[in-house]
Image (cartoon, rainbow, N blue to C red):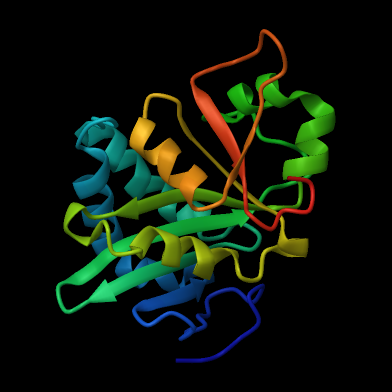
Length: 199
């Protein structure tokens, strides 16, 4: 496998800092698209997410476009059984998006904090760990791997307020919740990475 700079498209970089995790940059991860979709469905069709077949199909459909985003990378946790979990991310553009849950994030933080905390940072879009692989540090390893070369150590993610166990996990791993502006709380929580300079 060719080693390349993270910004180079269509290439991958294997990273062996964590025993069972690798990281791929760019569109090389599309070779594993079916396995990623299978893992996604295994994780997010269950409570508290309860995603249906259409939402899972949407993840599969957007993966090729996401893989072309600036700074796109995927961390993979692998074992003899296949992909135990994965994380995807990319660099948040300066012009903050308005689709998906971005509008909720912008409403809670306001434009100044979005620019200061999130623009140009590594955005963790998905983190999925199969049920059988939980409780072994898999999620921690994936987050560590994918954020290793985050710009200026700036990374962020969001999750649902209803996912109490997930929220507790991020807090336990040292991620910092960004408090919503008064009267703007929505259904999501924004977390900054443990080393984010503005945490």
